Image 1 (tube, rainbow, N blue to C red):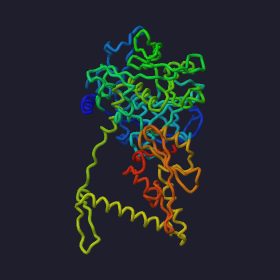
Image 2: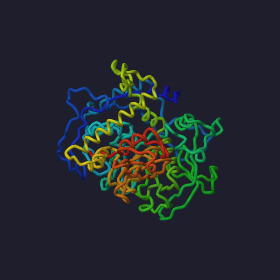
Image 3: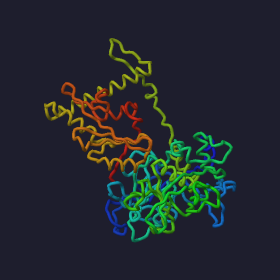
Image 4: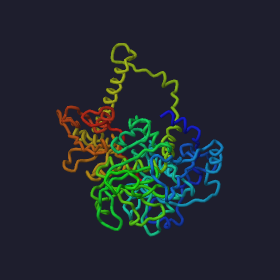
Length: 531
């Protein structure tokens, strides 16, 4: 990907959120209910802006499609985004770096999280989705792992989509009808840019055709370059269920997705222009996922999505589609996002990583060495493997002592040991206590169906056990964690006692480093916050 990084260096700029972003207390209802909210400024007027709230300033250009335009692969496709020169970027920075200080225009919006608590936020009118996420990460003391995302949720249509980091939040709100319950949601989504890391998982070979000199054989970086380069012509194709206009029935058609739009074939799998019928294009539309495809829209499967025009919000104007499995839906939705925003998505992806600097280690840290004090004389442990095993053993020993202190505190009874172990993991962000199987499935789906997304919860069928819910190959699997009693001491195990752990924290930390009996390592935990 080095070529792409070099291409983007010339257009990468950064700014910061304005001084006037403020937060009020939580509540429900319409924004108009906050006639005089109690506002808390982020920082004093004379304090310099927080560098954590910096953001890219980029130009977005949408390609206009003429009505009579043909969709032949041979035709050259103009660039989705006009070339930026340094002078243009400089003018953008001066105009957009601190929008609130230029015009002073602000607006109060409401942002929700999974449990439907909300906060009202007074923000500049040209604030972006990334700025909103940075604001809530700061105010809620979250770990900024670049996965926090703003969602547009249209309750009356039962659909939602990711608001891309560079999008203007006020432009999104301007498309909402006054009499509908539309909301902004703030939550994690680990899959937002995962296709840049593992594109071959998102675009299976049987769904992608590329007209290039590679004869269809492409590696990791070439595939992404093809999608981002407007002069090449990637194509997504396959069967989808579509809901006919004005009818309740769904029919299966062969669809083709190109830069010029989405088409379906009225004659089998033919891709000839005379057999392809235009469905939608993306310059004035967005792709959404259906939240209750079977229940609300009568779809044949739960893997529904749709294309909605930014100018029309009626249910009859939605282009409703449905895939047979999650991987197929993810491929279509991801390709539509790439075709609509192109290089802008890649800039959104690399911006947080470009801002990160490698932390400088202090002199004292550089001088630290592993020591062995078990013998008559201390010695330096030079073998890295031995140093690691000693560090792990010391950590386990410290935890056992901590558990013993907790179990003996306030009560001499050793029966408090299991309760103290429970208290240890109850405070962990990956533990979700009394969460049902369906709720765990929904939460993991919301936060990204990529390998390693997980959570732990109480078992509903057996009150004395726990369950690990884990995503692998876009499927969610559930593993029971059984208690093992050995000589009055309680352990936890995922493999019938072969590998035992003193508490759930040890178990999670082990499987974050080792796959063991699991299909993949634990990588991203599902987290909920209260705004």
